[in-house]
Length: 149
Image 1: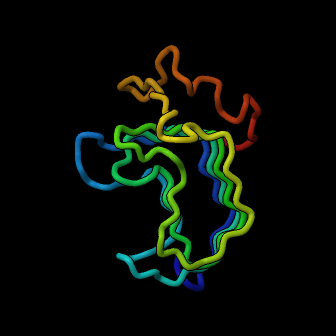
Image 2: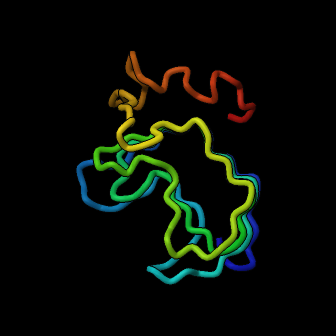
């Protein structure tokens, strides 16, 4: 998202995003915004971004959702996501220190974990299916159909 650009009505629902936990490279599961190095790039406008019911595992050295807002960000909703890592970067989202934009209408609800000490392994099988006993089973949006798949 760059200066002069407009993005809206972005829905990221019901995904399993798994990084490579064997390497040391930094990766993010979902990145919103724009930046280059430590110098902000002027941003455009982003509106109505919904991120729900995702399982994000093994992103490295940063939070699973990374926001670099150097423009206008309206109505960002992050809910019912489960993140799990081995390096204590679980709590979502990470807002970049050098962001210079404005945010309005931000909602963060029902995500697991609420702190790095409450993380729960989603018990993924090698085929990205959930194993019996996974905390992610029937946990999305409190059993409410969000209407978008």
